[in-house]
Length: 181
Image (tube, rainbow, N blue to C red; front, side, top):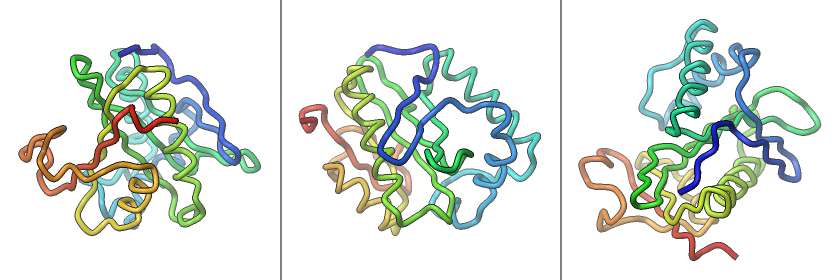
């Protein structure tokens, strides 16, 4: 597994994936306090810009410690954070990481996260040399399940990649590097 000490920018046809910056605090606060975005996430809402600023600092430190790769998503034709996507929970001895993502409610249902997930998978497999990417989604999160299946993720019914205890109330999906073209 190969790590970076920074988040390299990635572009898709409609999106720019870039590092979080302190100026994203207000947008992060709005995104992470949206009840619809938080429906399927096990985390407390981030309600203030101070909390969001602390979160951005935490992410920056985690990138330096090789714990995360984290991108802010913005539309090319309308700058400003609309979502985030990350690789985290790295297990170097297994060349494995977990993918996570969130998108502003107004941007959902337009295929934007599909673009972002595809780009981050490619980065993970080609640049980081990952062999397995997992995703944990809450039961009932059908939109996320469909997104993952479109990217050729498979349900991990037998807990090969994440233990039942680690998964908790989540359904585990996995993608092997052999699925890349």
